[in-house]
Image (cartoon, rainbow, N blue to C red; front, side, top):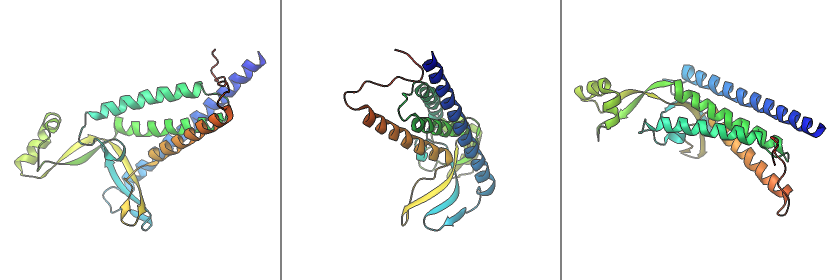
Length: 223
């Protein structure tokens, strides 16, 4: 009975810490994006460390690094995948073995916070995105934005300005002279750090368990 109470107390502690870390990362991400919209949008940006680190507003209607930006219907898939991932991460947090669990707790919390931060953007944030139409006219644009497309075509424009859901990015890192990493945000940083911590947890778990050791009992109990 005491061991069960101790396990329950540890689980509550980890859930509380995970909730605080996740909520904190979401808050920092959303506040930083609001600052980027108000301070950087429509400007050349800021250069805190020339040639290494810049702050530059970018609106990304696609997934990470702008992938699938030309397919607006993919947004629903991104949202569904994010929700499923969040459910899986909560399940993992509940079932964590006791070995090196704090590393995994922080990792899962940061991943959850980062995923929710970008999910909020995809659900509620809308901005105007320029769509090139000089080579071909996307069918989805004609269906979803007939008025904007008709205006652009009637005026002979090469680009159409369309409202799109997307994610605010504003962090730029140069990894080589003249070479820059795709623009990202605080939520992306949380995701990457969280994945790194969770991989470290798995590595330590494997080393401590050994090839012939039994699997440690999870927090949530079970047989």
